[in-house]
Image (tube, rainbow, N blue to C red; front, top):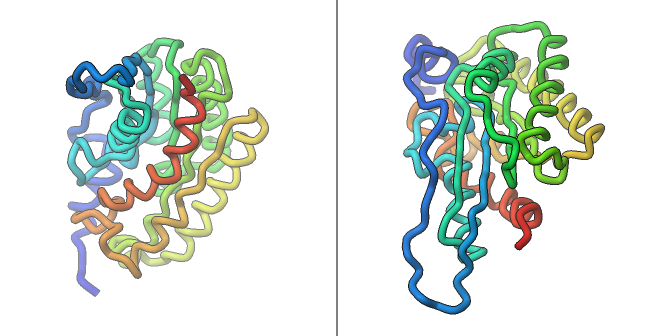
Length: 243
């Protein structure tokens, strides 16, 4: 199997020094003309996470929040949908909490997604830290979503064991086992708060059989993988942002 330089890939995936925006500008659709069926809407979407949310190693429009935004606009014929992303490559739950405190987001978002935890696992943080901080992050996500649990979606953590990088680690099976534990806990807490939990991990576990699901860095999901995420997300999102 082709060898990947661990140092370079770690800079792309797990290092907080990687230049990546904590937020992106609002997404606006073009003028759809004067069709009487056109609906103008100001829907606000907040995406919280890490490299899997900003879309490390894919284009700005290729991340799952960006693709989801465009899909919603097309489905609902919206002319504008405001997207804010608070995420950075390498962030753990601790760093996301710090960034949220600094950013101080509004509390009137129509939808909030949360996907976090891979860097806790990779950096060998104590699992109890995730148990504590994930619940705090979920509570904040609910707060930002107008205090409505129905407006929040938790996504499961992708499994990087099924990438060329993951296969070159000492124990890919351990990665999968540990991420299963993280995802099981996240699902449990989401259920406790009556928040939607969406499993997308199985998609990333096709990465070795379907290399098109892995980005050019040999580690992150590709545009195609994020598109698969959005196929599952879209009907849920549409239900949460009913006209």
